[in-house]
Image (cartoon, rainbow, N blue to C red):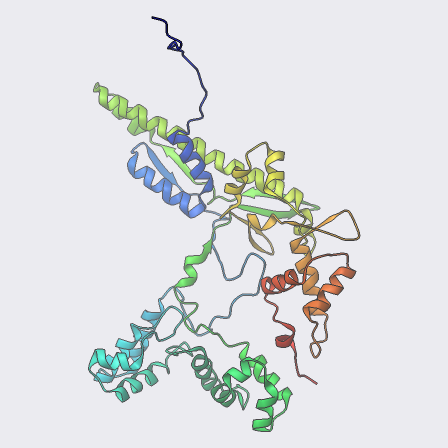
Length: 442
């Protein structure tokens, strides 16, 4: 019998890249920020008796509270009368209630309401619902809220933004004369800058309303901000950039380089055992320590190398007070440092660089390029935003520039972007529309 098809058995060798658990964890370690790395190593020391974690403290070990964005915005307003913002808002209010109010049924209702104050200081329950839940009269619950709203910080217990502002104005003896009544009776009209209606209603000038507007800008929309939550945003910089003579130096921070120490004495003692399982266990844990130590050191070296290259490429940012940024992509650094682009991405995400003028996330230094009309060079989005900010800063606030006019002025500077991009950059910079930028000063 003839077979047209024959079965042949062949051996074929193929190459596959298998990602081992050790490699996966090594990648993970690079991706960790400082706090995550410390938590990871602490867990590992609990699993491995041959390891001990040492966190070096010293000159560069102080946390930085993230009260500003990495773009250097002004610090948020916080109330001066808050003695210790590590205390939660709930604890702060309860302390005041026990201090100021006698133990009565009304005080119980105030404490009940405090449980419904959110992190921003607003009351999150309707008073009718609160009355039903407690079996109290609506007027009693309203009295309780009135007493709650007399506590610090000013504005706490408000049910909406309008009430929060009114409570703050009411407590401020330096508030403009008409501020309270304008916010109470014409809040939406005021917010929409339909000021001529308000001026006509109260027979006051637009300059008077401008004064009220400027005052309102200094009040807080979130009365509860500054309690407890701020400590969730501490930043431990991974590297430091210092000005030295005419140059810049880049250093690793001590906290960013945690040390794991091998427990040699314990290892020697356990090695005396003749039990094969014990010896295998020790060998396994020793290998784990050596790999972790190598991975942590490699992580620090990678972040430092990336930081050094960033400082080299963005030298002007650290020396020029205008803080200009050149176009820079992850791929460019990856090619220079002979690593994969994903390695650069992991090395900069969640890692921070400290300067004498602020703390910046390392990914801040990577910007996209925008082509210019009058030259072959490129400018970064950051540069365009700075130019846009400069144009707005120099405008006549009584006749603010429209987005179209800003677009025309940018084109005169050789920057070709769309009107939509102008609006987008305004939003990024926190610049209001021309209508909302208009002022009525003399």
